[in-house]
Image (cartoon, rainbow, N blue to C red):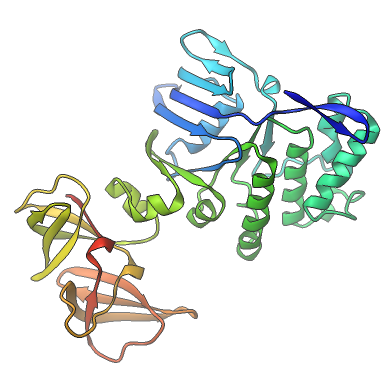
Length: 368
């Protein structure tokens, strides 16, 4: 902890520290919700918890917040132990100095914007002059200047979420936790909110952990994504790492909306697999222990497929089944044997038969 002057008055400000989750286990009744989960979030880093419903992402956030007690493992922020299953340590949420931003905003409807943001500072006995400077500074940074006297009911959803974030930042918490912070906003506003939310979180220099079910939101805001599957950490990495180099079929299939089809493994050449799909030879990256003569799961992302040029050999051919105009592009569906492959094009297709090419590095083959 260090001290910071606000208009001549000193208040306690939190230092930036690393959040560490080690072998965390959470059991709810007979259900093991989190299984040996490890995660680290560095100061100034934004990490998104992503995964399907029931994967454990909200449970992990609640465990870090102290809103539920894990059954094993450890949670630390810097040298401070929030939870240690072996030593029986459990720090209650009010002693963890966390900034919490909820999906529902959780603003007091009977308090003005100013009063909502100032509440945490007044609770900590910060001098009123310092409170005013801190609150007005935050409202200005978040584009809320002039709304100090309004009540939450008179604000838009986006404005209410900014007030919720300002309240969480007001007392300079050690760690920021956000539970689906943008899910209540409409689609257009959500896209705009990604920018200011990332900028605001990065400006704090604190570790930030947030839950989202929106893949685009996770990729746009987070420095790294922690992808959970049935209570286990499936992969942690930058958005680009997870999208371009998914370690497992689950990760490849979960991110984006790829084509996943079965193809026969013909042979292996180092890290390259030779496959056959509907009689067409195809090369792909081998993403695991493939066995010649057996089927593999072939992942082909729509944006990786393109109409084949003259002489391209890593190609498939099929009949055009559907074409959908989506404004910015066309979505075409081509039937190749029993597989129906989707790809994007800026132009309509004039032929009933279509040849599709893919770079071998962009085609991923996993054990079937």
